Length: 269
Image (cartoon, rainbow, N blue to C red):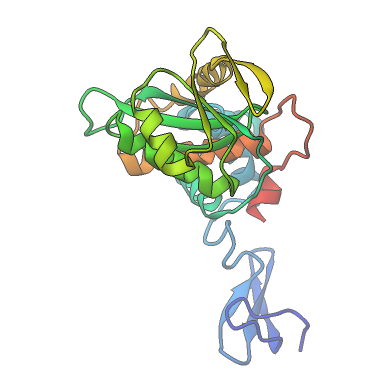
């Protein structure tokens, strides 16, 4: 008997049961489940080595799936269809979507929305983004309409992720924000309409000069990432990809903010 635990019933009564490629297989004497080191993991049922999948996922965060397949062939000499990076990336996106990594957000939030193309939506859909003044993204949401319902949804998500409302919310002049701010964040939150020109105001005996240039700068980074999609296939997949990119931006992308960066391997494992 070995000290390894069953991946299904967590019993320690497991015996060595041959090998799968270079991986040791095990069989649980309690429930009869057969498993290996890769069973129930991100790499389960994949015929490619882990290093190939991790590098491809990293490539796909920056370039299209076709370019990722090309880079994989040029760097690691593995030939795959462009659909393999897409499937691995989607699996990685679901993994990030289900993760609950916490951050400490500041008490000044910025909100904005931008046009994105989603199949089935008339002309454009809208990507709502909420970030704090430390350049950390708090919440993202893609909706078919640019109305108070979309503003309420993204502010509700931001409140859930942050755990507490901010002191100040800076937005553009969209009429949907004042009502959404009051209903979701509460009356104590100071709502400041400002765009490129800074708004000057007093709040809690402190003087502020705030504009929405910070989140407008973020939109340019989103555009660099978004253009490789050439539009999303549905609102569901649009929200999935945007949530994935939010986690990538906060925890993996190199930024001027001093923090410990996570690698693809740390997140997958």
